[in-house]
Length: 456
Image (cartoon, rainbow, N blue to C red; front, side, top):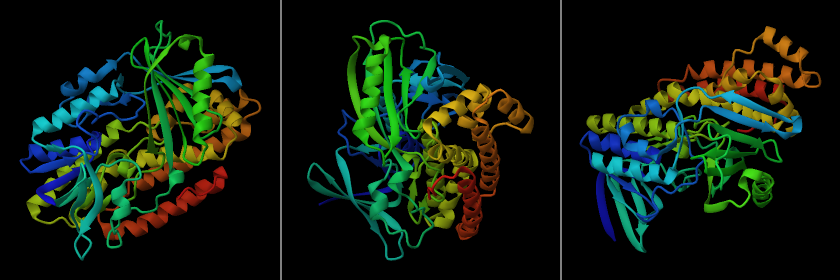
């Protein structure tokens, strides 16, 4: 068995892993990225290809290094097709938006982390996590092309994606790490890259359409005028093949896809839940999809993963300089995630919860009734200025959906209350339990108002 020793080992060469590794390597520390895929497949990840907020990415991998993967920077709004209401909603998307070639982007961020000084070990599959008697994570057991390889490290960063194996293998009994995780909080996603014969008329929009269940949707994201990322997402408790058929049937029914050629197919799992309450343990941090750093209403996770990786990398540097990898030292990473986007994503998850308790036709009617800019605020910022006056105005013009609009208004108020509570995220691990108790009381109110089954 071969052995490797590093200051930090990062698992996974995705967005969060590469930004973490680049951040640490630029500070002069020895960091290795272990990646299960071979070098030629690394960076090939199922994704909707939409990237929001690239104008403010972390600097560990410069923006100009990833810009060659931006294939369409003219998209500026979402286009929501609602067949039940015979309606199409054009909703502005705030901030910089681009559609990318995800595989090319994946290669470029690996190149960026490599340029910063990180090592990449491909064809390496994690088998187990190594821990001291006190629970501190100290390394990994892996296999590379059938050979056992052991890694020793002061810190392990888990960027292994949704439902990470590392979390199954780690004993978190002496940590605050969030283990309140189940399959129902995740969705499956499937996408095809489709080449069409003529330019589509909606090449400046991200197109969304409901699937046959309220918790699923179909998307069409234009990489270019003629290259379309067509996919769908659905909760893991739904029947996958039936919903994939939803996508294929819709493709057959759209005239712009007649005679189109599919050039790539890929599926993945992703979180549609609030970020983990804590993504730290002694010697261990989880980042990106492995800690649910994903917008739960849209599935967008690239920007959150980049920042989570950078924050974890910066806190790893602090811990290494102190010679202390305890959870107390790593805790600042949790605080920065919650301050930047964690509270917003938790608030957005409230609207996901509402959607599970509403009939799909009623949900589409509600969307068609709401002013577009208010719906955009809810989908992207986690809150909206939907006050009593606008409530009455909307209800007056939306006969048949008064109850749904009122429920949305009540849910919005509770989502705002939840976000305000996340602003009070604790500054030390010992205060987490009290913070969780109050958060859970707010969640009980949300379940009562929406009529949804508890998600956590």
